[in-house]
Length: 333
Image (cartoon, rainbow, N blue to C red):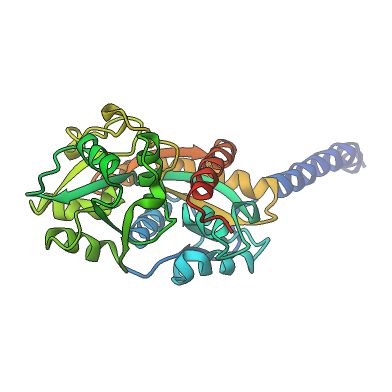
């Protein structure tokens, strides 16, 4: 009887403990979401390019640093000037197991009327890096600075033929903003569109065009080979490393810092606050990791680690600047 009485006295306490454990477990399940199946990392371009390389680095760090307890697989979805990948992600909404590695074409494609989908149809999770625009000429070009190039354009806007991979893309817009700030009508520039950055740089080396506007990562191989020279970079300040001696456009009295070649991660529309919080934390830890930063040093991309809320504000500012320049070029549809 004594033992039964003791157990009976403990029963209320055991019930309370069980209720507390259940409540805590339920609260954790509701607020602490984490992936429950393999995560798909969507790349908007073909395998082998810089976008694919950075996404695979992301996959590596998420696994090796144990930031993800489920597999992450790469899905290349090229086409439509990167718009097909955005369409693909939108079809997965609101599933948080799909992440898109995206570029500023999310802006330009929508503004140009190539797609109705834009950044408002996605969930911003993190900005990672920015691949600033540069203007490059042949190594033996008589043009020695961006200021000298702009002065030529003032005298004759068609004096220089610029190579690029797309009209209305971030690099074209950065160039347009630069010449506009110097008093040159960007609509009068001579532009030649190539399929790839490699083709445009070979064209300037061969003397078929006089300059190329591209990202730093695209221009660097020909510069390092001694075939071309960079005149200026459209960044707020100089970059470190091998580009430390390259002046910014701002240093040469030219404004071209409102449009950036950002690289970022988006989720599908309709993600919950808990799902956004999970990816916000995981991607922030990835961007701070030693492996991530060591590998990025070889790309000469500038770090731009913005978390979800800050990235959302950044997108609004960049979109307004992009719309303004594209409107001036008559490219908004």
